[in-house]
Image (tube, rainbow, N blue to C red; front, side):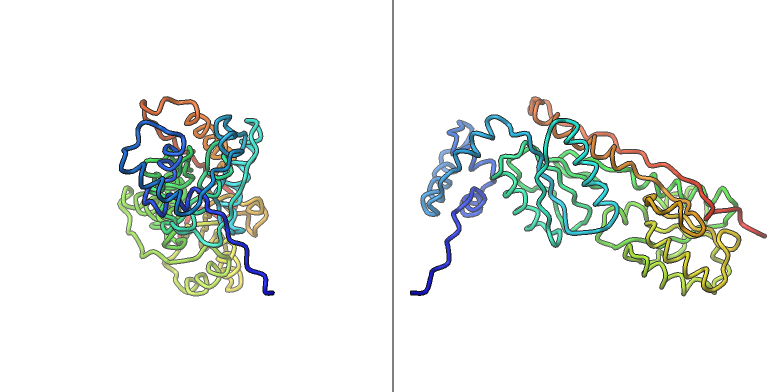
Length: 339
């Protein structure tokens, strides 16, 4: 006899999807909350019956007690920024007496994020932190059913948002180079779908426009040293390019290698500034001037925002935490423009 595959038991997100309501609405119906309309209640109960859904009694008990676990939705990456953000959240959660449960996605899209939130809600986490740096994650309007905070620039719609001020960081980089006497600053950008990349472009452009300087065309990159290296090979024969702001330190590393191979001196011929302040940035050749992001502070503000949501009166609304201010770290890769 051929064994039949096990049938997955229905979870609350399945009921919500079939009934066409949010995860939170299903929870309210199951707990006899009076704020649900009768028509909606009947639709949810019909979905419960159709799917033979059995609420997890243990999870419901944990929800009433508010578990000491914070859920984190991230994605499979070795990129420094998201990885350091995750570590900052973990450290802050531990300091506050919470553990973390991580759902890692292969790609960030709306369906994947929604499924991850549902999975964490089934674990009765106290709250969820969404590390969602791309446009395709589409966190706006996602039904969570649990307190949630978005870690991304640009705001999270109805959800509190915690982020480093990317625009301010880019402006610091450009203003530093202009103060050294460079006529303008070229920019190697990050991927178009990344919110940080878009904000850094905005900050770069705003700084140049405020100074009345020419705004060169954006050079598209992809966060990798390879991108910086390949782009650098196309820039070395341009004597008019004396300053380059890279959207991250990895691209700056590739650019430095390309310039060195062609005999272009840094910073005598071209000044280079990165973004992130990798632990290795001080050991580049030459040591890299860059913008430092305080990911531990991002983690602390994220956890603090979640804990505030757990205790605040919903009728009072919520306010976004102030953005974390970046800092300029000056090293040997930037210098005065030579006549």
